Amino acid sequence: MDALAGLLDGPRARGAFLLRMVMEPPWSVRIEDGAPICVMCVTAGEAWVVPDSGEAVPLRPGDIAVVRGPAAYTVADAPDAPPRAVIGPDGVCTTLTGEPLADSMRLGVRTWGNASDGGTTVLVGTYRMDGEVGRRLLDALPELIHLPADAWNCPLMPFLGEEIARDEPGQSVVLDRVLDLLLISGVRAWFSRPGAEAPAWYRAMGDPVVGRALRLLQDDPAHPWTVASLAAKTGVSRAALARRFTELVGEPPMGYLTGWRLALAADLLRDSDATIESVARQVGYSGAFALSAAFKRVRGVSPQEHRAAGA
Image 1 (cartoon, rainbow, N blue to C red):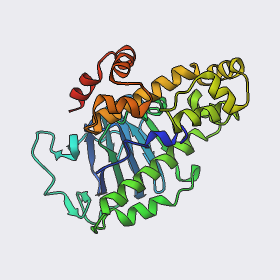
Image 2 (cartoon, rainbow, N blue to C red; image 1 turned 90 degrees about the horizontal axis):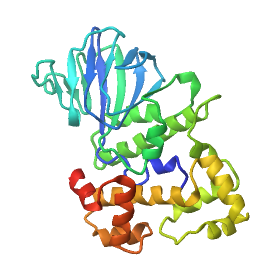
Image 3 (cartoon, one colour; image 1 turned 180 degrees about the horizontal axis):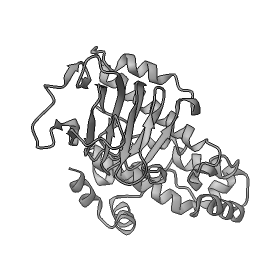
Image 4 (tube, rainbow, N blue to C red; image 1 turned 120 degrees about the vertical axis):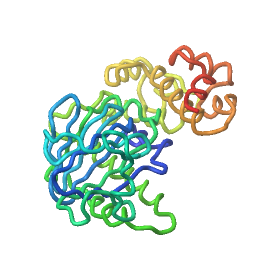
């Protein structure tokens, strides 16, 4: 597993909120769902993404936008259009005064809007969970990524457009996986742009020594790794690995491993009923006491407190 794949490995899209929005001007929707990530693709017409801070961005056919939450933003037919509806948590849609709009604007399976023949169509995929495994990547993303159609080549958008309105057995799983692939493709294209400010650990993946060390740690975090064992696997000395890893990643190998193990543990604590003892051994700690000590030291809360907060 590489660092980019780690974004969605574990807390992948599960029951993500997906819809096709069909609108005719004037329209403007305020998004206040608190979601960690939303992916939007325009297949017809034009839409504007207007963050509360930063410049408004136009989306045209073939463009993709990735919005990092939980900050609110607006999607509209014009950058200065006043909101006419609000999307809250779990995709609940209301007027500005709180009256429900879900029924009046439902146009079919996963299709919503103010006109069935509206000139603008936007595909929307929203992740409901804030996945801890991808925190390093999420923290590295700007609040808004915009990739115009001529900046990337992804065949997934037409496929999502066809699948999003289908209602067949297992359809939600199909859509979840397509959304995962679309997001990864978009982020990869963003980091691959000339002059892109990718995070240090992402750039380090291209180093023949440090990249291999990172993959070893991510693929098998429960292994009793030491700097010496990592150095042996990568074919350099302990001192050379420690120096090169720290220079490229920004922290030493064992510090990176601790953060990765605790991120995995945080997801397991939140998304499973496994005991703390079991979680500890899955991510490379000798037992519940060792995991609890590390969790408290690094995250400031105990595993029990983290699990209770997620519930």
